[in-house]
Image (tube, rainbow, N blue to C red):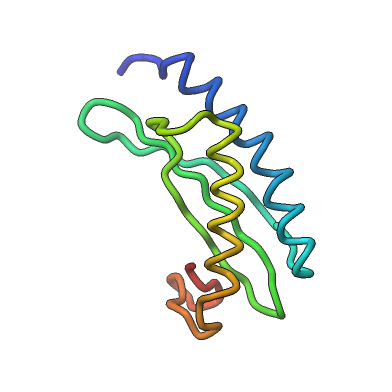
Length: 109
């Protein structure tokens, strides 16, 4: 297997740095807390896809939001802002009884 492309790694690093700040700031406005922001890689048709997964706490519940960030369709800083905005929008508009992950302790949004 070949090494991941340097441009992907640089993009993901820039996204994560910007997204941590943007997500934490947006969530603070709603008294929610970002617990983790992780990146997962999945092979897709010969190229790796990268997904950002945020786990957060809001109103006594834990939520998880996952979205593809690579291959890039926007610059990393723009993608981070979109990620934060969409996460907050889903958090505020989805029913608290949303669809739980595996053991039911985390709600996927």
